[in-house]
Amino acid sequence: MNKPIFTGIALLTVYLVWGSTFLGNQLGLEGGLPPLFLVGTRFLLAGLLLYGVARWNGESRGTWKEWKEAFLLGFLLLVCGPGLVAWSQQWLSSSLAALLIATSPVWVTLLDGDEKLTRTRWLGLMLGLLGVATLVGSSLVFSGENVLLGAAACLFSALAWAVGSIRAKKRSESKSWMFYSGQQMMLAGGVLSLLSYLGGEAVSLSTVEFKAWLALGYLTVFGSLVAYGAYTWLITNVSSATLSSHAYINPIVAVFLGIYLGGENVSPYLGSGALLGLLGVVLLLKPNGGEIGFWKRGRSLP
Image (cartoon, rainbow, N blue to C red):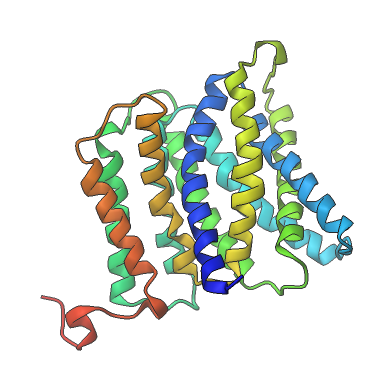
């Protein structure tokens, strides 16, 4: 398949599927599955399947150095990413979690020394963040037990995700995306399952609702196998700014799904927030972070 077309499909997959995982997490938690158990089981199942397929296709088991690197990336991207977010959603609303996670592109831009920090790119970052804030602002809930702990966890999750994504871009590609995805998810799933056990998460299978099992299946197949596989491929094929643009689209998808499937109230700022978020992504996706308008002609900001 033509690479630009494949890149577009992979980005669209990450945009839409990961946007739906907020609702998936919510349904799983409401249905009786503890957060670390939910995310750990999801990654462990998906990781074992992908790694098994990769080995079946003839790939070697990997060196000790590769396994150490996979453990570090799995910890940064998955344990500190979706794992920490699901854990924080015990106390945070989905909208507040989405807003805090949307800081990830800012961290990527600040930390990635290979990215050209143009004014157009900074404008895209700020517009995207403003769009998310506008989109979810009317439904933010800042009160409640452990809300500050949950907020801190989400901010750290965004930072860890940025660091992991930048580090993953610099690795040498000696294996397939399937092997890398499976390896990282398998290790992260094991860590999350261990943390679930050590943290005393109790799971009574007889009381878990059907919607929770359905959510776990969806998160495993689409959130992990499909979307994380697409993200792993994108890591080494697009710029960091393009890669992180999903953080602005995912909340838009999450809010729309929350309205139409979750029965949430319609935000009066829905249209304007979505428009700002999309505009931010358009600017982030400009080739090489090129300047626009009067900036490109060398004029200063008004």
